[in-house]
Image (cartoon, rainbow, N blue to C red; front, side):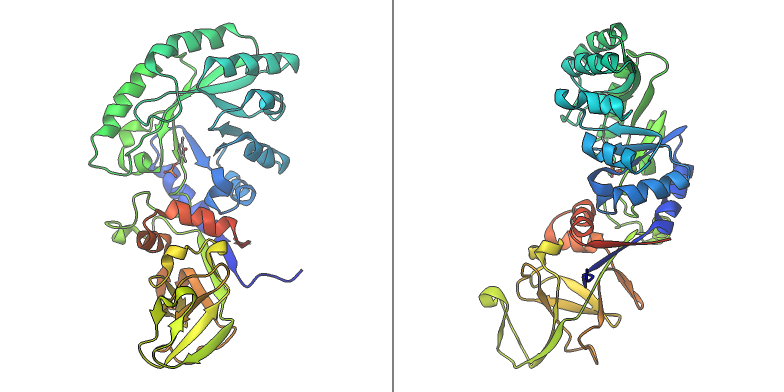
Length: 370
Ligand SMILES: *Cc1c(COP(=O)(O)O)cnc(C)c1O
């Protein structure tokens, strides 16, 4: 089968370097690598294998099917299923030795039954709400849940988990308030439980919250959770792992005063040369970049002209000498002396690096280095 012109390149050496930096920064005995959402678009199997090779033994996914994918690929160690496991999947969770989060008593009961039926034990971590208002037990439900888990055969309480809504803002007071509440929950569980709440933001900015384990996602993939502003001097501590490139399909000469793409939202101001690229919103290149995105060609920035289409877009190369069909175009990553990153792209469309990495990575062919 022919290859796509669009290439997402994943630099596993950069991933491992980010892991080493964060591991050493983490003030905790355990470290969870978050590989949910196909490792934020970077490919969960390849990333988990690379991280395991670098020493990581704990992984996090959103749903059971992601954990099973990793097990079938031979990934060992602990796999936390952050969204928990519904009743119909309890047997599969036991059989695959995954570690679900639990946030209601019903799931403790059906996980126990499934474990007993297979003559096995399943370890669970209690998810508790300390301020995110997402999943989790409330404080007044906790003693009952812990007692139930202790009384049920086949279920082992292995940890307690919460999540910070604002740890990417070092000045926000809520993080330490949430952590104080988390300590109240943690008093209600057994001494062998792993206590963990720190995401990338807390791993970077709140060392006093690392406790028994940190859980890093975006920082492993080379981005600061709140964006790069203020981190200009630290850009070699976290190296972006994803590069996205494509090729020029055609270069066309256009007179002044000509409308470009759907709706004619851009009209050439001068005689122009436009390069047509095989990239559109179906490749995760947001339509919101119409008339404001930028790409690199021959090491120079070329602005997007007109609306981004489903599989195509046009960029202005009037000021870049010699652009021809087949030239490499960089959408994310370095080319020559310049570099485009997911923070810049995200700022233009009102989102965060996380979302763009997921989209670009999951919607294009991936190739691995290192
Ligand atoms: C996604 C997620 C993380 C990782 O967050 P980052 O900001 O990417 O480090 C940690 N914990 C939970 C519960 C998550 O859902």
